Image (cartoon, rainbow, N blue to C red):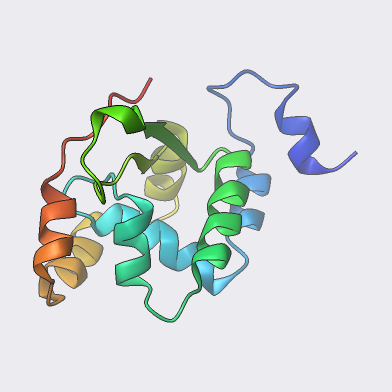
Amino acid sequence: MSALEHRHDRHDDELDPIEAMSALDTTTRKNIVGVIVGHPTSTPSKKELAYYLPDTPDSTISSNLSILEEAGIIESASHERADLEKGEPYRFFQLTDAARDLFDRNGLFEEAAYKNLIEQTEKTDDIEAAEGAPRPVFT
């Protein structure tokens, strides 16, 4: 049985630090976490992730988001698509509290540094609108 399969046997608020750190074994996953940490609301949509990771195909972002979610590093929340205008983001991602705590204990993904990187990035009107979109409630 893999480490990811064991995740389902634990309580949702538990995070296996070894599994979590192992999930960060690719540059793409580290970059996704960095964008989440640096995002103005710390809850980017996939559209925003794709903008900040322009050399990463959407399918790669999607598959890596799934791995990070399975490992307990991130969680997602969505709006009902019927309630949105065409082109508005509906699914958003944030770090779990347990992952933020793990990263803080180990000096990883320091928020100020990543926020500075995102603030320095030139943004299109479309991305500024996406950043200003209302976020769903994460439970």
